[in-house]
Image (cartoon, rainbow, N blue to C red; front, side, top):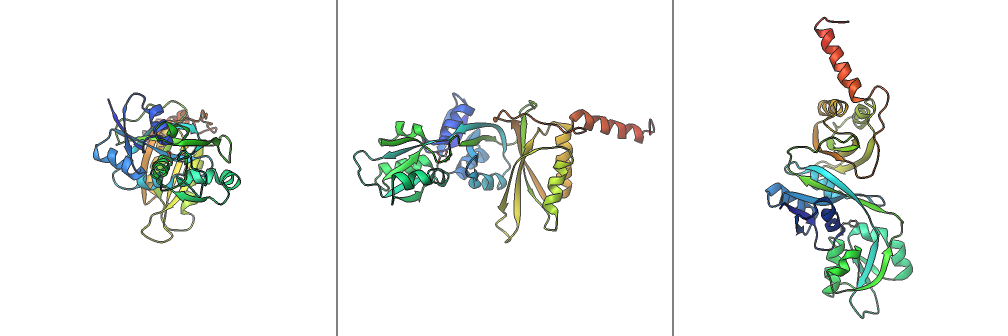
Length: 302
Ligand SMILES: O=C(O)C(=O)Cc1ccccc1
């Protein structure tokens, strides 16, 4: 059985994602996202499940930052989960003065809290389930959690299906140390983090390398390198798999152009997206073109 570290404690959305991505495996809760990834890097876990992107709040920056630091790890699978929340309180409590949760959850229930718990002060906790633990311990009055959290903590359900934006989704990834890659499926996602050189047009040039090869971006985030003010790393997701000639060609170009590129994985997409390929940008076009250059070099044709 594999050991899967996940961003816990028990009852987080990430635990649900880990159950979907690694059914039947041993799940090990980690208190923070960096701790879940550190467990993979140290070998304490075979894989880690962490949230990466939310349809309302955008990137999970703790995940991006930890992916770009320390030893390389790669995403090998992903799952999209619908996100709506339950509001849990200690049994019998009447006045709610504090509402605790993960910042992504608080941001997604802001209007509901204003309308239904007027005057309640939002308090950030490390995860939604950590908020339930804190409410149980008497530190705060209400927790905004995953629906499943009530099965783990002795709290009362005050409201369910809470969400300011309907149909919100979060994408979670399963991460391993670099090794064999998942097979290409024709509907894959590749992720990289690149440090562009610090000069005019560097980001535009980097994106142009993808655009001219007809590669569709699915996400772009900038995070500060933390070393020099104004210096950023770009986290870029795009359609396709590194095993494909057109994607390999683009990655080789980025490697030439950037100060640093880290490959963060190629794996099947969970959003049912299809990969649109521009005319002239199909894999056969790339292999054909390379073959033609080879024959020109050999003097076989002009
Ligand atoms: O705190 C959790 O339960 C998580 O798994 C992170 C999270 C928080 C809010 C929405 C989706 C995921």
